[in-house]
Image 1 (cartoon, rainbow over the protein chains, first blue to last red):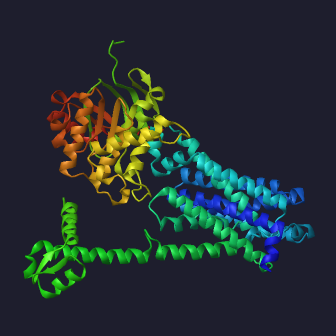
Image 2: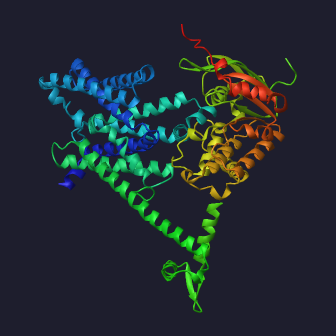
Image 3: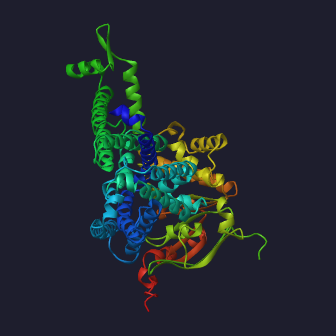
Length: 346
Length: 250
C-alpha cells in the first residue's frame, strides 16, 4: 500500500506541497508566537470561508486562484474590522477577534449550506475547505501551494534581520530608521499568504494551528531564534508529511485533522521534555540547583570537619569533598562551587 | 542663524494620545556636548519627548532639528536606549546578538552583520563590563546587566547624539556609577547625551544640564541656574495649575 502511494507521481507532488506549506508556516509560527499574534491567523482563516463560497456562487466553477482571491478579500476585511473595533471602541482586541472570526465563519457556513444543494458544489469539493483534504488536490492547485510556500520561505530568509528586530523591539527598529509600517505589512502579508494557500489542504478551521504549534514546540528546545525557526520549520514539515500520507491511506480522512494531531503530539512532547523549557527538564534542573545551594551553604558556613555526618556523606557523594588522611578536604569541584556562588552573590 | 548650530532644537512640539495632551508647545535648544537630565513626575511626558524626537511617536505639530538637519537625514547619528520594559526579555537571543542589533541601522535593509560589526559589538560589551556574558541568554540577566546591554547596543550605533530613556531603572548603585562614567566619557568626546531621569537627588552630581517638564517645559538650562527649589516645586507640586483644561473639548 505504502509503496503504491510513494510510486504515485501525484502523491509525491502533494506530499512535497504539504511539506513546503508546513515549512513555510512553521518558520512563520516562530515569529507569530513571539509577537503574541497567535489568534490573528485564526481570525483570518475563519473569515476566509464566506469569501470562498461567494466567489464560487458567482463563477460556478472551481477556479482555485479566484476562490483564494475571495478568501483573501474577506480575510483582509476581517482583520481590518478587528483593527477598527480595537481603535474606535473599548472592546478588547481578543474579544473583537473572536467576534469577527465567529460571525464571518457562521456566515460562510450558511452560504455553504445554501450551495450544497446544487450538484456542482459537492463535485467541486468545497467541503474540503473546511477540514482540508490534500490527497485529492489537483496538480495545478498543488503547484500554486508549492510556489507560494517557497516564496514565503525566501521572504523570511531575506528579511530575517528586520523581522527579528521588529518582533523583539519595534521602537528600536523605528529609531534605527526601519519603517515599521513596511515590516508590519510584510509580516501580515506573510501570514495572509500562508493561511490562504493552506486553506484547501489543511482547511479554514485548523490552518491557524500550523501558525502556532510549531513555534510553541520549538521554543521549548532552544534559546536561540535561529535554531527555534529551523526547528519550527522542521515540525511543520513533519506534520505536513504525515498528514498527507495518513489521509491518502485512509479515504476521507481529513488532512488538516491529521496534521493537527501530529502537531499536538509534537507540542505535548516538547512542553514535557523540551531541553530548555520542558516541564520535566526544569524540575530536574531545579532539583540539581537546590542540591548545589544546600551544598554551598554547608561548605561556606562552617568548618568542614565539624559538619554533621549526613552532610559530609552527601557532600562526598556529590564529589565536593574527598577523604584524605582520615580528614575531609575540599575537592576542585567543591572549590568551583563556592567560587561560583560567591561570584553570583556580588 | 548662529554660526554654531544647536545639537537639538525643538520648536512648538505638541503630542497627544487620543484626546489627552502629553506634551504641550515644547521649545528647547540644546547645545552640543552637554549631559542633560530630563526630569518630571510620572506621566509628565518625558519618554514621549524622546520618542517624538526620534519619530517613534508622531507629534500633532512642531519640528525637531539636529544640527540644523531634520530627523530623517540625521537619524543614523542618533543612539537610542529605550526603556527596559519595552522588550520581552524572554525573547530567544543572547547578549552579543542584542548588541549587534545596534549595527542594523548602519547596515540597512537585507544586509547581514559582518565580522567588523561583531568586533565593534564585542568591544562595546567589554566597555560596559559584560565580556563574561557574551553568550548569556538575555532572560538570565539582572536588571543592571540588562541596562548595560542596552547601553552597549546604543554605543555600537556610533552616534553623535544619545537619547536614553531611564537607563538607571532597576539598576544597582555600582552599575549606575559605571553607566554615568561611560556617559561622561561620551560627552568628553563631544557627544550630546540626553537622559530621562527619575532621581532628583543625583541630578547635580551626574548632569551639567537639566530640563524640567510636566507636559509643558517648566525650565531648562545649566543645572546650577535652573535646578532650583522654585522650579522643582513648580514641576512636582503645583500640578493643578499646569494641567491643561481639556483644550480639545469642543
